[in-house]
Length: 126
Ligand SMILES: Cc1cc2nc3c(=O)[nH]c(=O)nc-3n(C[C@H](O)[C@H](O)[C@H](O)COP(=O)(O)O)c2cc1C
Image (cartoon, rainbow, N blue to C red; front, side, top):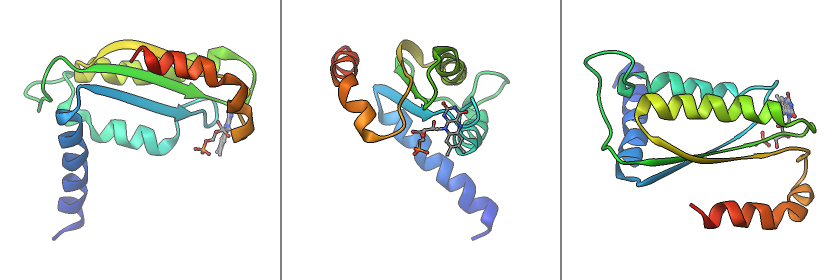
């Protein structure tokens, strides 16, 4: 099997999972104030399913999307930028944006502990 064929098979498998899901939750750390390159490469690979051009592949309609961003630094705008990249991606897949959460000042697991209630409350609304 050619490398190109294997790569397209990988993305098809992930899109099959998207197709089965009612809810998509994307969680991203900040890497240099942006989504990680690996996540960006994934989004780029999804282009054949996006409504930016015709014809395009589709996933079933009616899906709901949530975005979660976290970073080590203290300011929320950096999380908002990441959330906006995820929501832009959802928009072109026609996944409805239902909510987002930005977590700042998270470096270690122990930093998440005091935020547990906030996270549980967000998750309970999904
Ligand atoms: C390459 C790299 C770049 C990062 N850049 C930022 C940054 O610009 N702002 C920030 O607040 N945190 C930054 N961080 C910290 C990460 O957002 C944070 O540690 C996150 O929890 C890492 O998630 P991971 O362990 O899944 O990679 C960076 C971490 C890495 C590894």
